[in-house]
Image 1 (cartoon, rainbow, N blue to C red):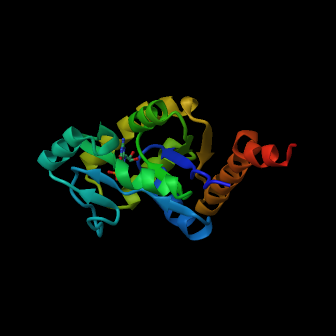
Image 2 (image 1 turned 180 degrees about the vertical axis):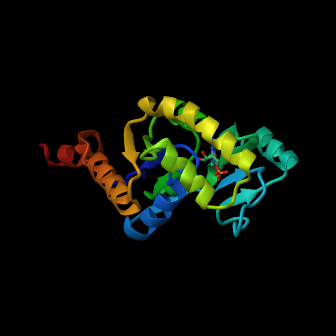
Image 3 (image 1 turned 90 degrees about the horizontal axis):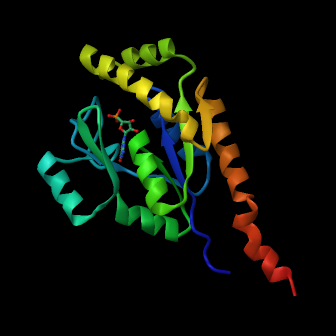
Length: 202
Ligand code: 5GP
């Protein structure tokens, strides 16, 4: 039987909803899962390192990469560019690895359109007050940045209805177990298993 293509999991949600924390915990508990590292033109925050959380690029280099067609999608979010590098993701999917993209709502729409597949999951905070509290508590954004992220949160929440699933991030453990449940269910979709059935049919 030929190698099954990995699942493409697209996670979006307002900044501070906990996407990064969920991804980190998911990598430690869900097998055969990798997170794609995006490129961005924003400056590193706190202890962020180039090639770990993001590839930090100048705007000029980012534009060159757009011209080269190196991104699966890219978008301007909170005044900076963010993009998903194409080559590595396609390779991982071909090898059967499940790949998480943690991208904004504009990027998610582009991917769904271009790739024609992918499981879209919206990570929502339990409330707006909790979202603001998390942004303040992480102490990495200025007052203006927090205001901008809260404003953008409204725009992103409006897109939640277009996603296949919504996970409300009340606790990280619960959110990761929801994510694992979604992946298990998707793996059992009849379309994903028809080949095995066909082999058994005379
Ligand atoms: P942050 O600056 O907080 O790390 O990320 C800001 C926003 O950019 C988040 O909503 C995040 O999901 C989004 N983002 C991160 N990487 C990408 C990417 O490669 N493409 C797109 N479209 N959005 C991204």
